[in-house]
Amino acid sequence: MGKILALDVGGTRIGVAAADAQLRFANPLTTLTNDEAIWDRLAALLQEHDVQTVVVGLPRGLEGQETAQTSICRDFAKELRERLQIAVALQDEATTSLKAEAELKARGKPYEKSDIDALAATYILEDYLHEETV
Image (cartoon, rainbow, N blue to C red; front, side, top):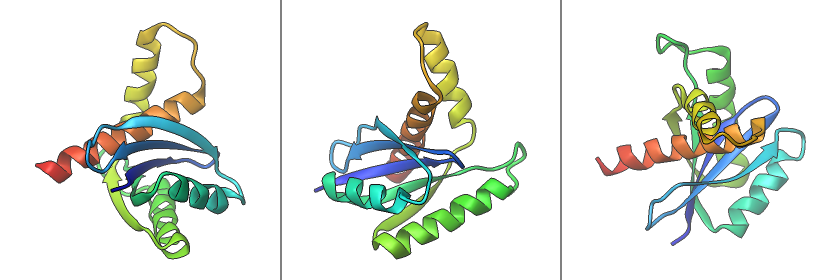
C-alpha cells in the first residue's frame, strides 16, 4: 500500500521520515541536501519507497503566526505537488527540532545536525498520523 514520507524543510537540509501507510509507525529515514538536485533525489525516494503521500512540516512563529519560513515551506509543498504529482499535506511542526535535539542530547551519544532534521521529520509524521486517526 506504500509509504507516507514527512519532510522537515530547511534552507540547507531536508530531514526525511517514513511510515508504512498501514502500520503507521514513523522512523527517521535520511537527510537530503536542499540544493538544485533536490527534486531528482525526492523523485527517486518516492519511487523507491512507493510513496502515496508526502507531509511537509509547516513552521510557525512562537505565537502561531506565519513567518518567512512558513511561506518557503508552503511554496515548497506546492512545487512538490506540481513537479512530482504526489499528494501533499501540511502539518504544524511547532518545536519538533527542539524536541529532537533534546532527545538526542538525552541519549548521551554524539549526533549531527542531520540527525536532528531526520528525527524532527519523524515527529512531524507522528503528529500527522495521530491527527489523521483522531
